[in-house]
Every structure is written in C-alpha cells, then in structure tokens.
Length: 144
Image (cartoon, rainbow, N blue to C red; front, side):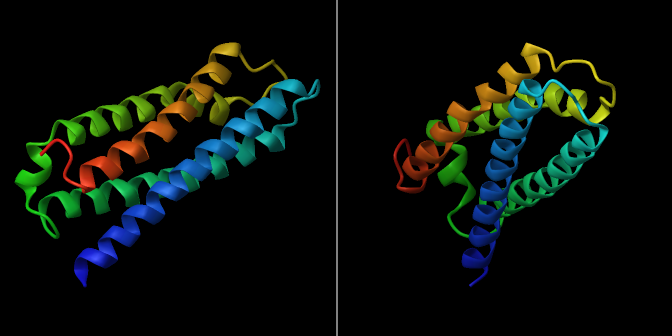
C-alpha cells in the first residue's frame, strides 16, 4: 500500500515538473516573439516556476523514499547503471533550468529575452523524453 501511494506521488511530481517546464518554455517563446513585454508576464513565470518547484520537491522526496525505504531493495537501484544514467540526466535537466528560472523570475524591464535562455529551456525537452524511457528500463530490471 505504501509503495503504491509513494509511486503515485512520484509520478504526479514528475508529471507536474514536466508540465511546468513545457508551459514555461512555451510562455517564454511567445514572450520573446512579442514586441512588448509586460511586467505581469514575469509574475506569471514566478507562479509557473513556484508550482514547478513544488512538483520537483514532491518528485525528489517520493523518489528518495522509493529508493531507500519502500518497494524494491536499495541495492536494486544502487547497483543499476541505468538508474545512475537516469539520475545524471535528471541532474542535468535541473541544472540547465537554473539560469532560465533566475533570469525570467527577476526580469521586469522591457529588455528582450536572450537566446541563451530560450536555448536552455528548449534543451530540457529532449531530456524529458529520454528520462521516462530510462525509468521504464530501470523498473523492469534492465541493467541490474
């Protein structure tokens, strides 16, 4: 029962994180295409990223509980190179989003959004496609 509950929370956190990042990427692209930047748009980014941060914390906490406390033994994950690849990609995904989050949440002027911010946000999209594949392989025991 506990494993199902924690797995569900983990999945909801991951889906919320992915949805938040996709929405932020689409919003930044439309904001960059718009010639007039409105201050309220940056308030929207703060809300999007706040909800995404909650989803990230939920996902990481539930994932740690799944890894260390409930479900399969910790050795199943710790000795699996697919798990380590997934963790590296998740870390890379989160690291690539630090600068765009910082930039979009602090900006309130009418300056254009740099191309670097848009590229970093778009670089997260392929990672979000590979991570679930690795998670599926890992859960099926591939690599163990």
